[in-house]
Image (cartoon, rainbow, N blue to C red):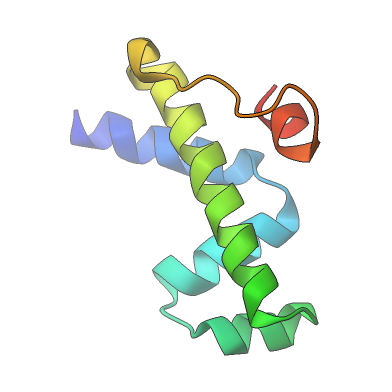
Length: 87
């Protein structure tokens, strides 16, 4: 089960847009600070936090849709960038 989750997470990471991949990799896998990631991307620390939240929601949705469909959360908004990315 653990191997399946790891594989699913890797696939979900590859499905993220490049900026979100950069944030997730930098923050969780490379243990970089929010300020370092913000500097790399040329955005504010607040924006990095927003991107991180968006990425986590997309990853959670993607993994749940593959591993545990009954835990898929409904879209918060029917329109908007996050809804389009989830679709």
